[in-house]
Image 1 (tube, rainbow, N blue to C red):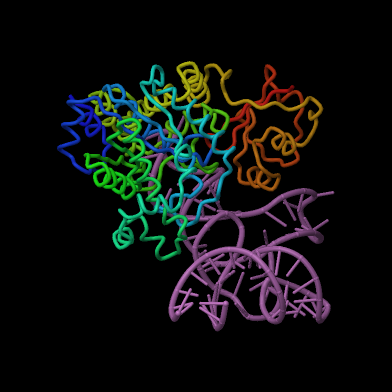
Image 2 (cartoon, protein in one colour):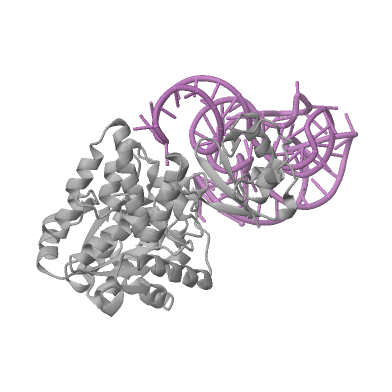
Length: 405
RNA sequence: GGAGGAGUUCCCGAGUGGUCAAAGGGGGCGGACUGUAAAUCCGUUAGCUCAGCUUUCGAUGGUUCGAAUCCAUCCUCCUCCA
């Protein structure tokens, strides 16, 4: 079975520039391909994770991935599908973010012995000479054609600066540069990158007279078409400091029934037979599939130890009994004993404001040690702490363990 | 460069001197129902010492007993003309 078959079976691929040729190429040769990452945050999120998985599948099949950090292009900002212009980042921020990305990628991608490469397009983009670039690259781009590209459509209505309009040339040039430097012949990206990928492949064909290909990956969306990986707290990050392994686990534990199979296929390495079996479970049964999904994805991102801890904590809280050791914990200074419950919860970061806490209690959503709190003026005394800890439940499934420092 | 228009609470979007912490929708949160799911229904959604008070409608000043609403300046964005 070729990688393409694997990727297709698992539902990764959205479109190809040249379907048959790509299949043949990937079967016969070891190919160098690239995927771009915008270093606009200091961590990757679950949206990137699909891409990482595709990259990992490719590498396992013997191909060589290039992770391209868009240090140069981030200074421009990709207008595709965005309604707003992107804020500009400093070089220091970009470099910091790139370092974080690599650490996260190493969980899935083997960078040893040049089996995968990370490069930053700032290396060639930042020193370009404007006129040379226009004469060399600019000539090959037809504005008429660019204007018809899907990715500019929205922005043509809402406004597009010349700066951002150039993004496509930059990305196209990246592909050309990678082709020249590393023999990279394939670009992979999210489906929103289609126009940009085409631009690059075309450019290589024109400049070098050599074939170049592209393919796009499905964007991780729910069955309703909404982007996945968004929570009330924002994106679901791969960085444990930004999204704790427990929260990360819970996110996948709680996906919609209808998304389970898709997620298992895209986000784990489980064999497809198993994926289909789990995805076919009905009603209560599918909870088993969700546990597998949560465990597997957490294991890939945070490692086996963390995944086990998260699963144990969830089991203890929701399955009843068990070990509460790994439940998310915050601590309060002992001086707070005797204070009102709201002050304690604020200190422990369970609630963002007292107003919200008050509302929570009034609506009957706050439990301490599984007893509903009805009095706003409840004082937290030592008797609330069993074996040194107090279990707070906010709403139906939000647990916090509070200990005294 | 010229002429118009716009900037509202997490998002979209009403509001054009007091009854506005600001309609409506989305999202979020809480509750009911459940399977730690979805759908549905109900409540709620600036902060605080919650009776009351304080800060909020691009920014800064001003008019007024009183401004998101009027005036001035500035910033940002959009449209048309060049």
